[in-house]
Amino acid sequence: GEGKVKTEPDQALITISVESKGNDAADVKKENDKKMDAVLKLIKKANIAKEDFQTQRVSLNPNYDYEKKKNYYLATQTVQILLKDLSKYDELMEGTVDAGINRINNVVFKTSKLTQLQSEARKLAMKDAKLKAEDYVSVLGQKVGRAMTISDNSQTYYPQPMYAAMKTMERSDASAPRETLAVGEINITANVTVSFILE
Image (cartoon, rainbow, N blue to C red):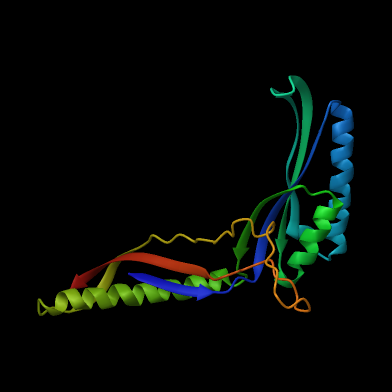
């Protein structure tokens, strides 16, 4: 059986990075640290709780530019932010770009009601499984008895907008607020396999 619940996302998991490139490792790291410091201060100033943002990756690597035939260093720091108020998205993204973010890695939409909606989807899936079983056995003149085994085969899928943070949709009315996100809907689907005793 399958149960499906649709909901509008109310959160976004945003992964952004600061990349710095140069000839001297110490200078590259110093520049990268300075930009990330400004980004983290901006995130705190945006009243995002400290448990809702975290450094994901820090790297400093030597690289080789084959076109220019010279070595350089690349420093990268990546931070992940759980934004619980989507109305702050534009302001946050513009601020972090101004502070030094030069790569938007990913934006994943989420819902704060996931557990509740998964429960609803599971109940719908069980009802669907029982209805299907009743359809099958009605031709045999039997009845569906108690369930013997239940297997949950569910997976949660979060839609990811392509370049949502990079592209802006300009509205024809200049006084209207700019919109840069099309959040769509999240499908929360439960799939179950149920074995019933037939009477």
